[in-house]
Length: 134
Image 1 (cartoon, one colour):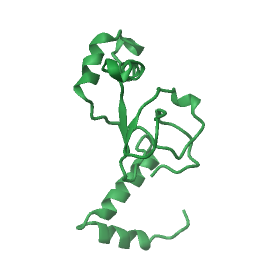
Image 2 (cartoon, rainbow, N blue to C red):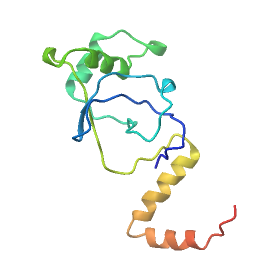
Image 3 (tube, rainbow, N blue to C red):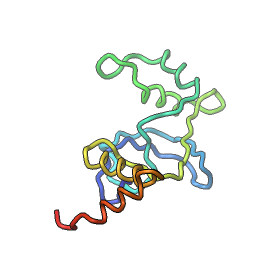
Image 4 (cartoon, rainbow, N blue to C red):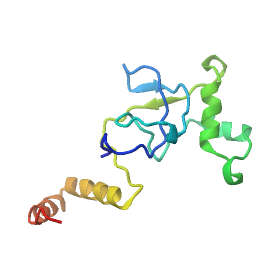
């Protein structure tokens, strides 16, 4: 799980309101501009409404000549909801793991393995036998 003291290495977008699991996205902000951590973050995979995919046909290629999903999302965010725009984020109340580096990937793998009914107990027993010194 991502800890609050870790640097921001993920794309983050401001969202309006917090009384619900569905948050209207208000703008996109480059991750290098965000010093805050411990806030909801965007996962590396998306479930997109077809309108997002359609928006890809209305943008010009970005970095490397590729069509960027973030550019399509930015257009939708900038388009008023009454004109068919808008974008929402959904709060998922589950642990989130950063698998962008080796240690994060290992942490995620161990966390999921510990929940497995077949291998979890044996893995926990093994980990408990390991010395605390590294």
